[in-house]
Image (tube, rainbow, N blue to C red; front, side, top):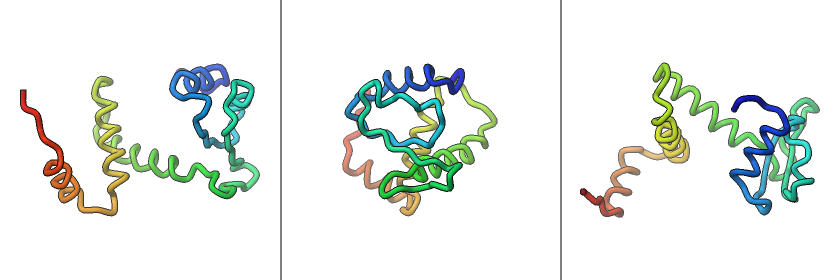
Length: 118
């Protein structure tokens, strides 16, 4: 992202989500005004006020994922921009299956999905 200004964040959010999306964020002022754009399901936690979770509203999961992804991706010491989405998708798969044997999880997928060779 070029910056964390409201206009930048809101433009990205509007371009990637629909107004019926559920958005969980922290208290960063850049998220102010989403409700004015029709996002009625915007839930916030304010870490500065020692507010880390309110019912089901929290951002611990996404913070946990990004911590995991950063630790994993830093080992590459940079990568081609064209490969970033694939590397991030691999991080997502590994994170979501971190309590499983990855080898067995992949074998299960390969058995159930037909591989198409061109």
